[in-house]
Image (cartoon, rainbow, N blue to C red; front, side):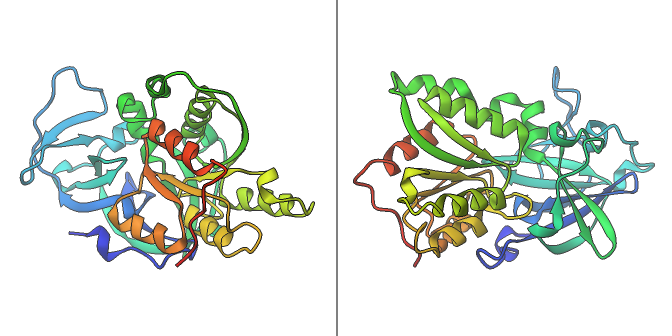
Length: 311
């Protein structure tokens, strides 16, 4: 069994630990921080009217867990002996799912700098289910977008733009919000939600490096940085530079350090909050809590707000 607390990396190093697994001989990867445990395949109870990629449920202890048939979702062949398959139990977005895979290879530590966006022909590319390709010891590992997979299978568990309605009447804000998010689907939902909440001046970047480049360019005109950016909203998992590294770079910079930084990620749990706090995060919130994110942006962009400082 793999415990999340055992694999957390040092904060702000721009590294990730990937669990390699195989389906039909192809190598895939998942951030170890998303993996709660690895179990042997076991009998399942089917669920009437379930999504075609939902195999059923099982109860390994005191919890009923839904199993996603990942080979079927990816249109890859099933294994010759399914009883030898593995259930990869994940925990993200405050949801627990198990994914059927054929084998687990091991864990690799890689730099986000060595993870590149896939070509558009690989599992749908920018609109697809692959968030990046990692190279490790001369082999390529396709990192899957598990948030997108679950959002397609169970849309109600993803960001709901309609949640903004419960905030009531909103005024338009011309403050610039810098958003760093690599998932095309989630980026669209975040932008739509913030626009619906009145934040119409958004700068969208695909990873922490792009966001940091924007900030460096903004610094060069010599004006107060808040003339360019009022707040940063960043995911954690992103190619080239992750959200923790971006946070560290901002809070270590004498010009940028007072910019509020909000971590908005499926990985936010108590252990991850400790990491974010150590780096000076102004707030941290788990996807898909988009209405609560808007409330945090409202708070940290007020003129009298004092940004958090690194400890």
